[in-house]
Image 1 (cartoon, rainbow, N blue to C red):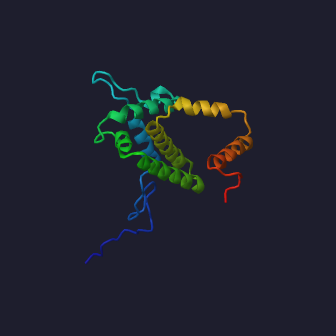
Image 2 (tube, rainbow, N blue to C red; image 1 turned 180 degrees about the horizontal axis):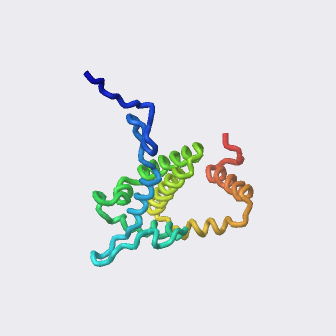
Image 3 (cartoon, rainbow, N blue to C red; image 1 turned 90 degrees about the vertical axis):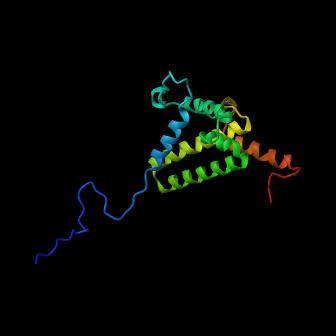
Length: 176
């Protein structure tokens, strides 16, 4: 009687993952796919949408993403993630932004640049959804950044610190 040969599970073939261990798909790939889907603007059937990468990788993508999310405000929530978020309201949008921000912080803390890029894209997407919900245009934010440009971060932050207590009727900048 011949003995059946058993595979030695301690040896692994080059390039193969050990059996029994599940590897989660890369979050960055999912984020890129989500962002790519959000950027494909609804066009007439005859027109082919331009792939986002063909448009060039620049900060202008944020303006285009804002335009897409804004246009989805009136879309069917059954087929548009942006429409679904906008329909669910400010609290849900803020919650999603917070969740993505925490995931971004985790990846930064873990020192995982690839995952940090993907989570950063998620944070920017949810920030833009929040802007659309609040009626804020990207130009409003760009103008504020330009206003702050060249101002010391310490001086700028100090100017904001005084405004909050005054708005609350407090006479001190120290919040108890």
